[in-house]
Image (cartoon, rainbow, N blue to C red; front, side):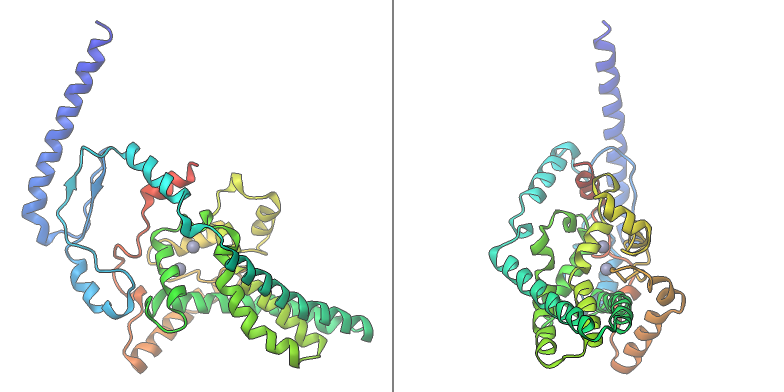
Length: 332
Ligand SMILES: [Zn+2]
Ligand SMILES: [Zn+2]
C-alpha cells in the first residue's frame, strides 16, 4: 500500500503536468505572432523560439555567422527526457574531435612560443650587457597593459563584425561568435587547439621584428605583449573555469587582477553582451566600458560605413548561450 500511494500521486502529478502542457501548446499556436520569449517553468525540455527575431535577423544578415533562427511553435517533447539529453550532450561534447589538439596545432604552438622567447632572451641578454634593466622592465609592463587593450579591441571587432566567410579573420570570427552560444566548449578545448591560431599570427608578426630589431627595450615590449596576446585564449578559458577545478596559482592571479577574473568575464556573457571584452588582465574593461569607447567606435563605423554591430540587435538565439548544456558540463 505504501508503495502504491506514491505511484498514484506521481501519475496524477504527471497527468496535471500534461494537461498544463496541452493548454500551453494551444495558447502558443494562437498567440505566436505576438510572442517574444516565452518561459515555461516545467521540469521538461521546452523550446522557446521568438517569432520577432526574424525581422531583426534580416537587418544583421550580413554580419552573422549562423542561420537565422527557425520560427517554430512552442513545443513540448515528453519523449526526450532532460536526463537522456544531458548524457548524450555531455558525451558528445567530451568526445568532440574538434576540441582535440592535432600535431599541426602543437607545431604552431611550438613555433609561437619560440617566437616569443627569442625577443625576451635577446632583451635580457642586451640588458645584461648594458646593465640597464629599467628600460626593458618598464617596456615589459607596458607590453602587458597594451596586450589587454589589444585583446579587448580585437574581441570587440570579431564579436560584432564580419562572419565566417570574412577574409583572414573568418575562422576567428566564427569561433568567437560561436563561443557566446557554447561558452563551455572553451574549457573542453585542448591547450594547443585553443591557442594555435594566435600562435600562428604571433609567429608571422613577431618573427620579422626578431630579425631586424636589436634594442632590448623594444624586444622586451614585443616579447611580453605578443606572449600575453598568444596566451589570452588560455586566460579566457580559465575565466570560464570552475573555481574548484582551477589551479590555485591561477585563482590567486585572477583574484589579484593579474589575469582576467571569472566574475568580470561572466558579465561579458550576460545581457547586453557589449562590455568586458578584454581577456588578458581585464584592467581596461572598466575604463573602456565607463568611457563608452566601444559605443563611440560603433557609431563611427555605422555613420562612416553603414555597418551595424551585432550588439545593437536585440539579443537573439545566437547570443544566448545554451545554459542547459553549460550546466551539464559544469557538473562534470
Ligand atoms: Zn565575446
Ligand atoms: Zn568567454
